[in-house]
Image (cartoon, rainbow, N blue to C red):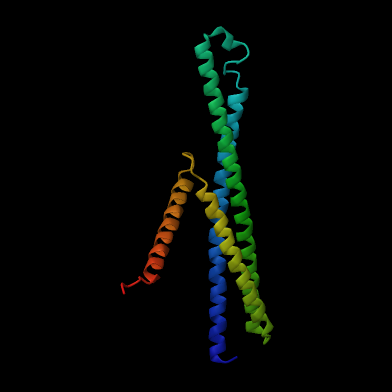
Length: 201
């Protein structure tokens, strides 16, 4: 190989290695995020079970009859409101977990694809087979798509974390919404500047 070809091959190898490191880092973050969601889901599940099966709670069918109607109605309303909030939060966590799981699978696949791409480039440095470079570039493109898609799924999961028990997801979700809002504003300004103004005749 010539010096220029060698330099290009080294750059391709470095790019694949860097993308592997990036995928591994994002995969580790996605794994931590999924563990956090699992812990939150276990806490919500135990809270729901306490609300529905705890012996310390007043039995609605018997003990509430001993209270006056106003207190009974108030207690029923409080219990129903708590159960509704817990059910809604469980549903939200399930949706977040699904997005996080899909994102982690995509990032895992991207890491494997980048590893195969790096292997193809390493073999190309040993054997003069140009088809290995083509295969490596195709794999690199597929890995980049998987990396972007997996990161997008994780961002969707974080943007849905708007509850008080998920401060990280809430803050990142607000940050994403602000970035999208600023991006839309900039596009509107660009369009308004690009629109020609009619001059008086």
